[in-house]
Length: 130
Image (cartoon, rainbow, N blue to C red; front, side):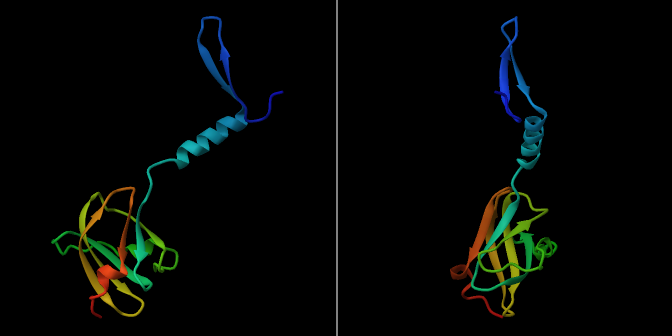
């Protein structure tokens, strides 16, 4: 019995195999391949507070990019939330952020890899001022 979405190999007269799939299966394969592109680079907020501004600069350059919280629906990053980071290649960066309490902080030499998750935790920023 052939069900919708079945994939079958059929041997041809010349010894070659041909992959046969129904229209439903080909649509599924198409959707899966387009969704399987490279992962987004993400920041994981492990600080104690919601972050309301988040900027990145190449390490030591003081050339701050756009506020990355614009990539989030509510323009903030709650504790344990991840934020999509755009326009940043793999490298070492300084990160400047402000949280909901008004605390501002610069964390130096943060390693960022394209398609990976990087985080900043409360222990790292406990000595940041307001």
